Image (cartoon, rainbow, N blue to C red; front, side, top):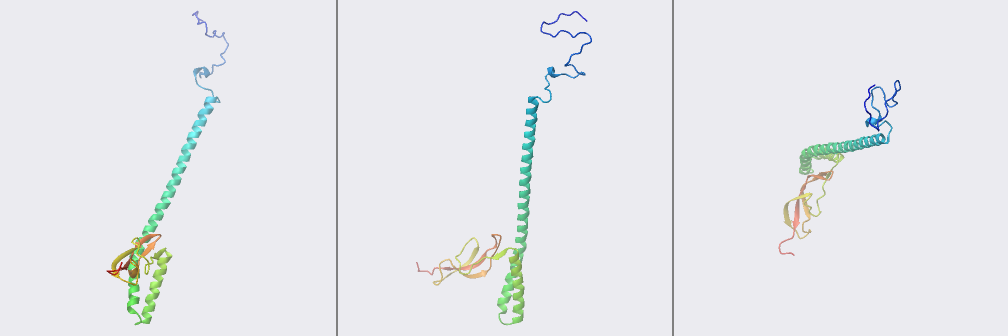
Length: 192
């Protein structure tokens, strides 16, 4: 032992052979500024970490739910778009079948019946896929679903009423595939 002067507030030197109860195997004790496990500071830190992880998990779950919903909407929109493309291509076939039935009239009852059967099957197929005809004849002209190709003066019809359907229009899930091409009534000149 050396005889160095001690500071008045310093612990007295341990006696030979005695051990400091705070000294361990080289590890620093609470006097070194490291909180012991189980202290209030440690519990608060663990709660904070838990809350951060829970918040991050909830955000990730919400993002995944939004992703799943967006993907389902996109998939549905693609399917509807594909259906509309196919139906647009089929509409001229339907028109030609109807023209053939009308052109034959009573000339060939067997042929007319066969064509009418094919037209009916195609109409049922389209209807089964959600395609519906846009009503027009006798209706008031609606530019969102009708396309006026001519107007004819008529005293027998209201101004703007559809008096003839030139080509049928169709819609699918409230989306207009093709507007109905129509002839509308106009007021005869000189009438109020």
